[in-house]
Amino acid sequence: MIDRLARQLRKEERDLLVLEAVLSHHPIGISRIAEVTGIDEHKTRYSLRMLEDDGLVDPTPNGAVPVDGVAGRVDEINAGLDALCERVDDLKRYGST
Image (tube, rainbow, N blue to C red):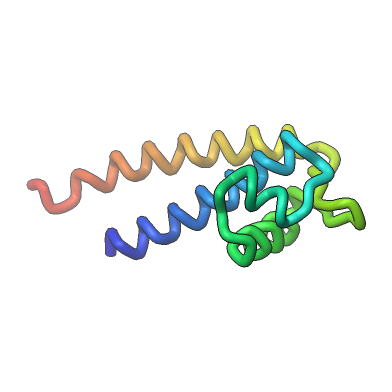
C-alpha cells in the first residue's frame, strides 16, 4: 500500500515541478522543461498533458504557458496539500490501539 502511495506522490511531485518550470520560464517547451527539471522528456510530456487536463497550463506554438488565474489555482493546490498532510497524520492512528 505504501509503495503505491509513494509512486503516486512522485508523479504528483513531477507534475508540480513541471508546473513550476512553466510558471518561471514560460513559454517553455518540453526539451527545456526536461533540462530545467531533470525529468525525462517522455515524463515531462505526460506531466504537461496532465497539467493541461487540470486546466493549469495551455500549449502554444512557442511552448507551454500558465493559464490566466493560475495563481489562485496554485493557492487551492497548496491548501489541498495542507489538508492531505493533516489527513495522513490522522491515518497514523489506525492500528496503534
